[in-house]
Length: 73
Image (cartoon, rainbow, N blue to C red; front, top):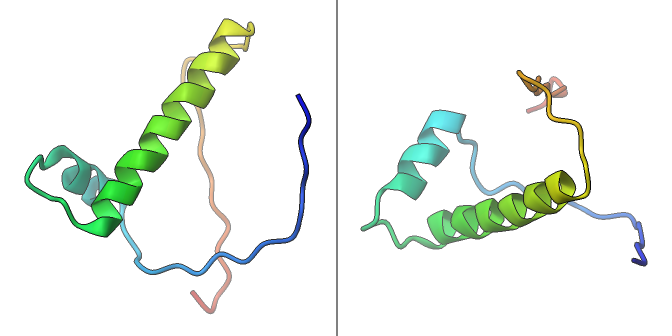
């Protein structure tokens, strides 16, 4: 599989907590563009995770997620 890397710009449109994002996705009546985008990203993440697992990825009991934010955010 060929993979290319390049520079990109991320333009945030919203600041959500994990709980807010999950609540938006769990509401079947919420058809807002942001919610639909979150659902699409979840589908992509699920497919990629499944592929990693099928490829023999190591499963850790408690994944640790960290974010480093600058002071301007």
